[in-house]
Image 1 (cartoon, one colour):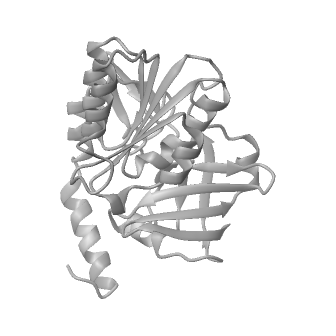
Image 2 (cartoon, one colour):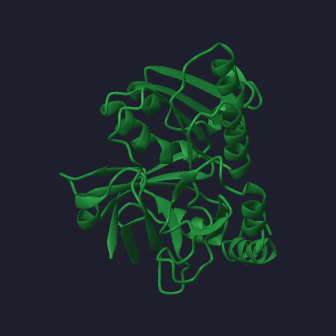
Length: 280
């Protein structure tokens, strides 16, 4: 059992938790993830490690409540315990290298995943530019944290309520059009966002990494649910990733797979809401 030591609500649907998991905290690296199960009947939830403290033995997770399982997790409070908390899993991001200028792009909850990786890029000696985007200002997370580790920081909102009125690709495209030399882009967020970031960088031949943990189930490569087409080859995002060359991912196939069980997910979510006395 893994105790929740701290909980914070980042916005209406996004929760921040610090969990006591010393064995994982001791060896995990930026880019890796954990698979958790709240209770005996809960499904497995893959969550990229948002931060870790080796001294205190803690792991930070940030997640958006989008269905029954994440809402169940979000209902837990400080002092409650999570049944299973397995990790670290996946391959860590190669952050030790000095690339030059690295642009870290986070969309919505994806910024929490970007943060530890971006910090490691900065600590390695890279010039770090961060682009943090969301639909509106109240959905922007990790604003202070990203600003503290970045040499340059940009924020975007779809509705113009904060920063640049537009998408993360708006700022990225502007940087490129101004002739900024970019040596690597690391992008995490909704699949359409990663698709269009990769489309922009592919045209300029800028190396790009994207993280694909949302499609996972088992987390060990046994179930095969996380198959993703990368460069014409079938990969498992849990053991071959979670990060891949953004220029080689078949995003359309990925989006189709993510929506494969949408009907069942909606039924499960409705039943959960009804059991909690909420609206269907």
